[in-house]
Length: 205
Image 1: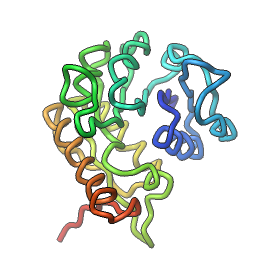
Image 2: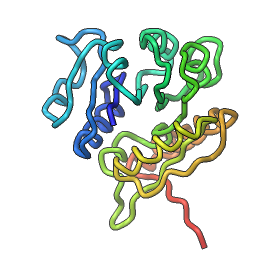
Image 3: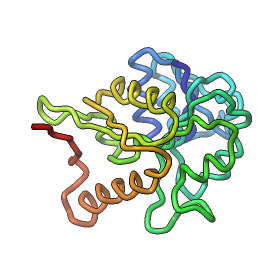
């Protein structure tokens, strides 16, 4: 796939690396191509950097992994997203998010042309994206959104990042639940002292 990554920090960088290693074409969309976080990502095969609108124009899929308060500004910077899948990996944490919205994905939908917007890659830490394996067991991910096309893309990209499964949990009405689940991980990892090396696995009998 041709993937634009907007937000080249921990989450965007980890996924850019994993997806490039799987042969996807990665376009890092940045405001300043001479000065941006994650320059080391250009060492990855199939990874290039370009202005945000150009990256979006080249891509089939867009990953948004910027701080949540910037969600509206970043979405407005994308240009025309018609026909493209947008994957939202952001979370409102402790009230810090886009003004007027309780979650980042609804803010994206309100400010872009694409209806193929889903939420995924937000429920665990970037360290688990770098390495989702715990012994011989790989962690699971989850995805929400009305778009069946978007969910199918997210599920494939989760597999390509090394996760065992990516389970659909419902439509757009589950965006807030996904962010609550993310905060559950943050609470355990940070506030309850479990550390970042924890993750979720759906078990079946």
